[in-house]
Image (cartoon, rainbow, N blue to C red; front, side, top):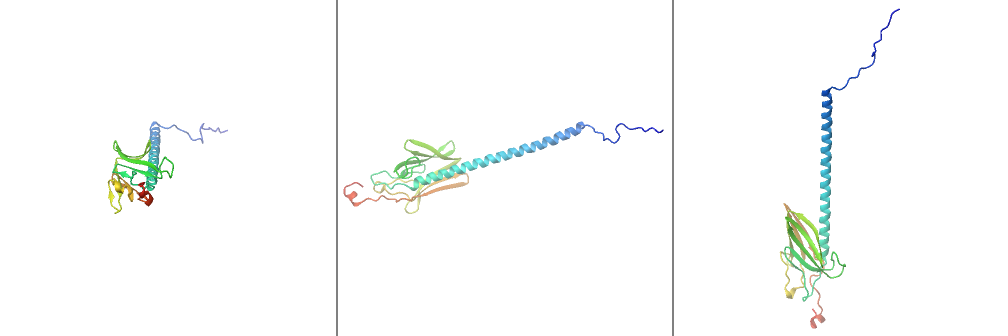
Length: 206
């Protein structure tokens, strides 16, 4: 009778462990993949932060322009004995029917100012005892200008006593930031001169 000799691992694939070189190659590949993933995440996070910062700055600029425009579009044409708009390149003051803090429709004295704070151009607003910063532009310079009746921009608006009621046709805020120039123009929507009746002139109440 023939005897059959069976191999102990016949038909079974033998498994062997990774060699040291193979493990090193795998570790290098994994490290490269992790590095790429981390770099991609860091770039995405940085891009997201820049987008959020840009959007926040854009919203701030939009609000600043809205507040600047609304408060100066409704200026009050003062009577000769009252104080009208006075301004130069760095500040202006006037009466407005649309103050930012007070009651709308009430004649209120307001004040806008541009100042340089450590290389940053800052636009601030004052009404009564309250003052706050509206917006700022890093590394920028700026000025206020005033358009007269002949459509000429002037750096100062100092009313003469016998013509104190006259308001500029428009006011603009110019901001120079690098190679960019931003113009915030406000057209005066109220009458530029106060209406004085004959009775007021007769009794000296103008």
